[in-house]
Length: 88
Image (cartoon, rainbow, N blue to C red; front, top):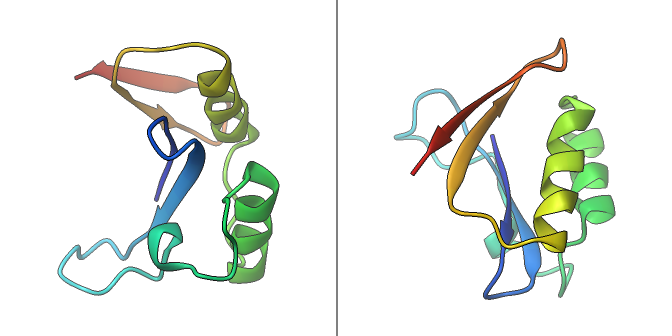
């Protein structure tokens, strides 16, 4: 699953995929026409509807991305609240 801030579109993106990336994603906010702007609250509701729980730290990190301009990075979030950052 990928939750990120799209600075060019000024909204958030979410993609939920199978482990096997050759399959069609379970959900992709890019192709979700029901919401014009994908807020974190909207995406949280999508995850709830899909029965998917993610660490709260992912939402907090995505929200922080709106407040500052960060270099591109991948942050892995774990259930215990720990993270691992990979700079791109």
